[in-house]
Length: 319
Image (cartoon, rainbow, N blue to C red):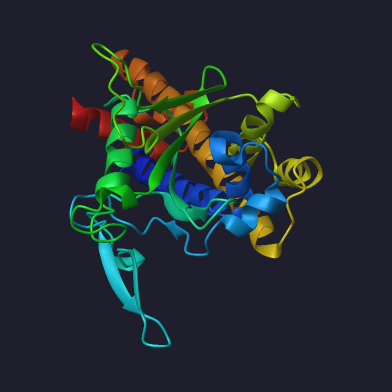
């Protein structure tokens, strides 16, 4: 495998591991409670200690398929032989080919037994190949349509659960948050149509590259920025989580923060290596154009002859 391809494969693998670690960290109840307080109207005036117990234990991270027909009900039997209808999941070992929700879970409302379905998605940057809001609309729509035969049957549409699809997009130009939802514009008459206009909700959270200041309006952005930062070290991240947000420093979350920091360093190092390799290739290409041989180029650039020969072979193969 040539050097360029090898570096690309290694970088892709590191980014995949980073993304998986980010989802795992976001899936901790202490973090989800902060996201709910900052992004979901029903929990905005509550404390993390009040919200955390309302989050149900069945938090699915990278296990629930999005595709039509695959998200819907699965029936399980508990220890007492009682049937439990829940979200369909796929085995993590064989999920290749499936598009999966990053994180999806139920949270109960403080008043009463009703629940909301929450989906959290993390993006390292805004995608260039499609408009991210279109994807968010699709995900929220699937949260609604997949409730058929799980939350409601036949025509019992009043049993549909309210849904939120919350998107956290890193490396944006500024901090932002938008709530996209249904509106009812009266065009003719005064008819009041029965039903819930607030069933579908999308929250887009943009995180700037720089960590947000310690201000009330930036509380959620500062937490998420610190948690997902590719520049803060382990001690800095844990200090913000523990001392500013009072998140319990369990061994598991400490280990996951450490892994994320190591992966961030690896991604940065691969980027530096790639940059150096590209610079070296440009230098070699210029010297080849001048008719210099491999040995002379190696001596001029203070590199091993074998390294220069490999680069020359790649250049000649492409050309």
